[in-house]
Image (cartoon, rainbow, N blue to C red; front, top):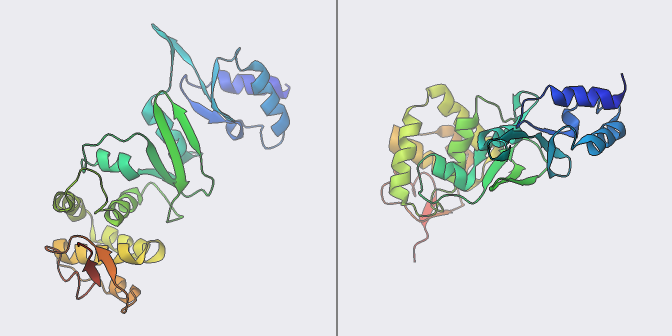
Length: 247
């Protein structure tokens, strides 16, 4: 069986709406040029729709014509690699998903443990991928990483009051196990900014009455970290070097 036949058989077995790239074809590693040519020459026959260079999906014809993949399937493609989780939704789409803002995002930002940056647009859904701060993204630590990402930008979330966002984050924090809290501390120290570590330290003290020695020791004692909301955060200035930047 030649490469063209192998490629055709593999695509024919795919479910309609499934996104794939050249690299997802089993014979690509050994016959990359032949795979690219086979897809290019037979894309119409195979019912393929090109999203961007090297990225396609197998179309399905419904009552009103060709149907595009579901948004969840598109997001799954960019957050997974060979059935392994490598990314997660972050930014404005996450704020909206967690109910922190009513502003509907124009795009979905995905942080991935892959250096390559990608952009794609499909059926009005614009995807932008960026390298994640923490390079060991897995299914088990997504919630922790998302929490840290939101906390990092807690005073920059559009159409949102910090106090309300903090209260909603506190509910999520209290649902986490002590092991997850420890994991959050470790990841923050390893991969996040000084300011984020300071915010997390004050947040843990305020909502869990827990003083993190690990976070405290990781901060430069002579540095100050700008934050626009200190009124109700415990020891924000004395322990965590946060300083109000309101004029």
